[in-house]
Image (cartoon, rainbow, N blue to C red; front, side, top):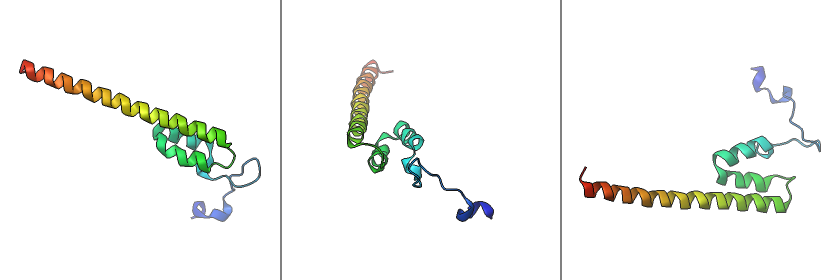
Length: 92
């Protein structure tokens, strides 16, 4: 099985010539950020080329995004409870 032979596969090199890990690739980080934002935080902090200011900024952005999602979900639940009560009062 040639495709499983690691010695024949060329290494993915970054600009500095060091092998780039899959979790350091920008596309993977962006895809993770869009799909499951909290899982992107370790990828951002383990990225060797990002400055600390960018890491803090991205972490804060993810935190605000998660908090906003939680707050919006709680508002939706309150509205659904009010709708349920209204339907029960109408006895439908």
